[in-house]
Image (cartoon, rainbow, N blue to C red; front, side, top):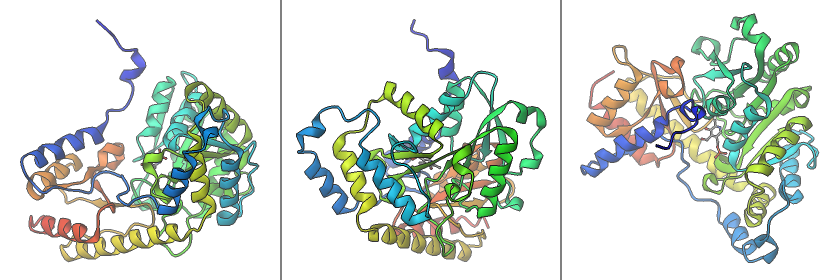
Length: 388
Ligand code: PLP
């Protein structure tokens, strides 16, 4: 009998895998299923980035091992982007780590910092990968509920002193998955003061930094004075440039944490393929028109979706950022029951709020990763069920 280590049992269940399984069963029965459940960008990577990779892949230098922590040109490219977009200064050599997508860094930072018995503060609802790293390091999670009445921001005053005494790491994520709100600069200021006071490292997940609908760009944690002293920001090309399959992300900020993440990456992965690093640099330093187009597409889809939702009486506050919509469900159902009902009766896949934590009860998450016409059809099908 082959028995897994106990830590594997601590990993969160893959609820998206279950969701896909249920949807596939409906598709196998011949139903036209519209999947609004997952967060997988539907558009292709811009052609100039693909071309850059095609050309770079012929360079024999890239067929060898890349430098352990990645090429300096890519670190310079992300530093330049942060300077242009956020007026943040980053030293490419010491304040940038290249990751295999944001995900790896989000898991590794827990392994870098947490011992068994330590506490990590995690948003609830929140992106489930934060839980994975904490589980693998044998530490404890303390959830910070994100409530609508508080703008889906954590209320630090509600945390218990006993937990704070043991807390070493915390995750924040704005624009937020799943609640689709942005954070004001004042929230980051408050977070830095809180982290300094309690000796907690901040991991700011900025995966949706390029997708804000409020007119101005979402604020980066690193724009606040003192941010680099208390933490790092995780950035990814997955959403901004439709490069989810390429697996490129960054940890930016604190030199100590960048050093630790580089150390752990060395042991796991060595480095990304050089051709991908070159294409990633092309994405960051080339024309940013593609980012504007992507933004316009999501804004348009968001507006269409909320207009349609309004027609069927499903009223919700429009998303401020990310490519998700966080919608309160009618009374009388759990979020899992409601998601099952939409799949069975309308053939629409949505993610139940509880997939992101207990405080997600009462909501479902819809993605804007489907063309406008399909979004309209999805809401029209839901409208026919007369649930609102
Ligand atoms: N953080 C959040 C909040 C996400 O939703 C995602 C992806 O869905 C990621 C991080 C990780 O993205 P990637 O590993 O593709 O960079």
